[in-house]
Image: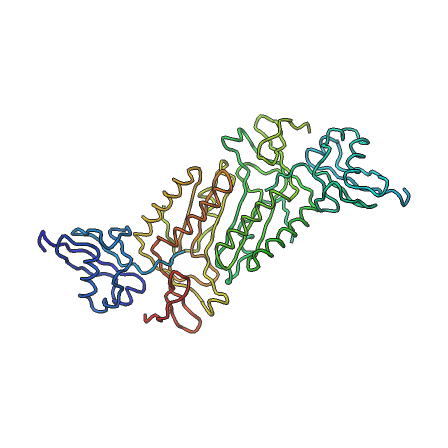
Length: 86
Length: 86
Length: 146
Length: 146
């Protein structure tokens, strides 16, 4: 990894974790990068991740964000299925 | 008491019971009679009752009623201070 | 069912009275004796009632709520006697399949209680005075002479 | 404070967390696992969460409520794990000087939970199937393959 790329920790929950068959992964993306770039990388790279939505609900560092938000090296990017709490 | 008059049980609560110095009384009114007639009789007859309102909230036989409702012999007529429950 | 008690109001009992697996939302309201900045020294409130009428009027009120929210189940208990500041004078539980019904039915019951259940309260203050509370929530100017 | 638990939700604890003599109205909401006519055989629901995010998001949510109702105090607990039908998955208590604030704050919290707290549920049915619940309240067609 060099200064022009970011390595992010990716997390999957609930049905998405079942689809991908794992709860987390690491991916690298060239900088500057958005959450959407991470999503595309994940869907292309990880087995089973092609069945994830193209525009999932996402959080970066424990906060919901839009897909055009920037990511930095070391960020945690989470793919959130439709929220069903309460 | 004859068939042309009604004897009703009158009940006082909370501040009204304090004003009148009792929690119940009996009064007779000539028939036909309304709750308002009972109120007037009570205010005129019972010591301390003159300080009750002329148009109190009233109930007949456990149900709130207007002052022009009819009363019958044997009814229970209650003088209710402004309700403050809950 | 009796709607009046002289014991502390049990939330657990109220919730148990309305709970069932068909009803996914339960709303509880507790009204407690307040002693805040507005009250200045309320130690307790003495609650009294036209008890026979309270029982039948609560029956009518719960029936009215059942007519508006047929899938809801409602339990309510009003405490009488001397209730110290901070303790509950009334507890209401409404359970329904969906939460909006539970909230609305619970709110309806407390609003109707304030309007039609014949209960009265007298504030017992730290300075020894006793004041009847009028429905606007403010004490009457006339001190009690019990 | 931690907002998550794997134990049954204690209403008494939530109420104790928000009670005070200044706050005369307390509204509690309990969301319970439902098994009614619409559900057809839900034995339990398995709740999972993005736990670290739930904790910070609940903190933000409670702060948002405190900004809107400065005199209210709010407590909330969400249960995770396998919760049998009829038991509570979430409990919220809101106490305030006046009842309207308590009702409104409590309602606000549950509506916001549904919108922004990352929790998911899978129905465990009597027939052995397991179905993820989507936010509209209806199960997805795809059975789980855990």
